[in-house]
Image 1 (cartoon, helix red, strand yellow):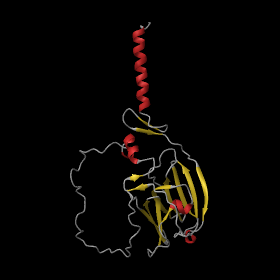
Image 2 (image 1 turned 45 degrees about the vertical axis):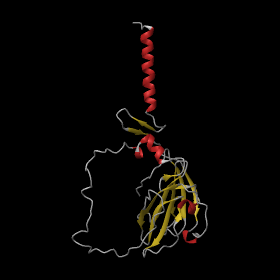
Image 3 (image 1 turned 135 degrees about the horizontal axis):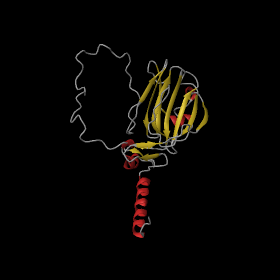
Image 4 (image 1 turned 120 degrees about the vertical axis):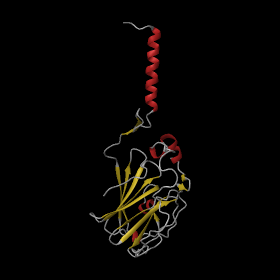
Amino acid sequence: MSMTPRLLSVLIVVFCFAGLSKAQKTIDEHTEVMPDGTWRVSVESVIPMEFMGVVHAFSAFDTTQQFHEKPVRDENGFLIGRLERAEEAVEGRRGHPAVNPNALPQGQDPVLQTAPPTHGFERAVDISVNGMGYTSVVPADPCLDVGPNHVIQMINGGSGGYFRIYNKSLVSVGAQTYLDTYTGSVGGAGDPIVLYDALADRWVMTEFSASGNKLLVAVSQTASPTGAWYAYSYQATNFPDYPKYAI
């Protein structure tokens, strides 16, 4: 059966619009929004890694040096070109739909604790010491881990991820230091993670880079975080926003 020219032109227009609709649902080469609203993200199983060398012992690092730290964050988020607000305008908050204003519970959360517990505070904390304070960066993204002899705290600073090492008496063994400054790696932008690996008896500190979608990773050479560290740079396929690890 032959088609009339008018019917053929209508079919061509329909096919063109169908192709255009599919193209509009593609966020980038790795991410696509499916017709049912779900996201399909394809990532490489192995990502490129660069070994950046061994960093000298932190105990020998002069934390009083003056460094040129390029600001990348402040109270309103990123200062660099990859602004969260621009990202959210395309993808929604962290790649998720907007918050449902009718979600339950309405009003104050019923599990919010507004009064001291009736059983008191029998279990006293042995040591209470202030850690690194607010750096005028939002969010602060604080994290902390404890090893056999040390405690490491990390937070966001204006030029990336700060870390500070304490002994078990919570006495600082050095000034708070930017991870990228200490490791001499490409510029960091924060979202820090610190973990102590009890099986390997090693420390891990990470943050993402200010550009290039990289993850900066430092692994202690020994059980002591005051010693030397190995530094690595991993190339992610997409923006590695606040990664999580299991060790």
